[in-house]
Image 1 (tube, rainbow, N blue to C red):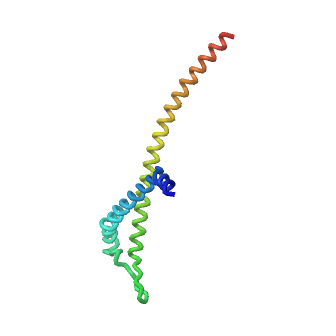
Image 2: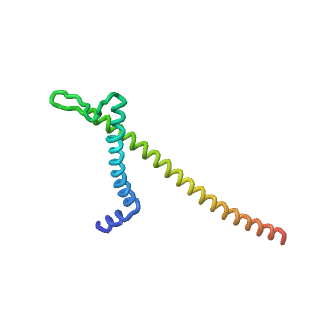
Image 3: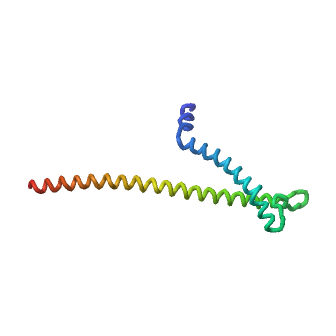
Amino acid sequence: MIKEFKQFIAKGNVVDLAVGVIIGSAFGKIVSSLVNDILMPIIGIIIGGVDFTNLSITVGSAKITYGMFIQNIIDFLIIAFCIFIFVKIINKITLINKEEKKEEITENELSVLKEIKEELKKLNKTK
């Protein structure tokens, strides 16, 4: 069981996933700071000085902090947009690399096809 666990941990996908989670967590903190410290004060000024973090409704003895919910939605949208842009950039880089490899393969295939053509010509002349 320990051997299987070591193999599982040693797989590249697990390590990549762990790195992704750690970076994602740090990225989430950066975006939260961007939203809390920069964007929300600006949005608050635009809509008349409203601080979203303090928006709440008291129902009986429960306090519903819908302002935090609004702020978390904004956090999510910004994080989702940043991830979208990041994935688009990675896909574009990957596509460029694939096209370069495809061109290399095509040139190699073309040279092999030319050699085959020459050999076929030689065979036809000897017949």
